[in-house]
Image (cartoon, rainbow, N blue to C red):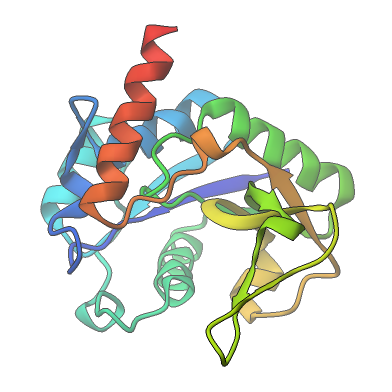
Length: 218
């Protein structure tokens, strides 16, 4: 199976300016995604998808090329990542590159590791055609709830563990992804909360830095 890894990294970021080039553990955020993707050894090709020459240059230094900069209309705040990725897949197709599946690796999940990529792809290949999304645990259902109209806490019920999409890994067949078809089924690839951090604010970045230092200290 031929699988292409796409790392979407536009320049604009309001809550954390220059987010994708912000240093984490002495490396730009996108470098962590590049290293995990290449280190997994299971992706046929890996590309950066960006509108920014600086981001493209940093990714190239990590061994991940940028076939074409995305156009400005696909780099706006309201532009869908899927549309930007479909643009790049079209560019690749026009130069003769065709793939069975696409794995989207957001650089805002820098603690995802090469083993996670291998595990998610193994799950995908075992049950294909399907989709795979990475998740991390939040808490048992009974710990969560909502604030009711009167301000009271209304807990959920049950002992099952509630998980959240962590944004680290998405895998789809190229046909489903390109044509926005609903996958036959979507499977969850579980990751520990310590690797499921999604960096969107300076607080997230500091949390990721602390977790990275703890991992290195072990």
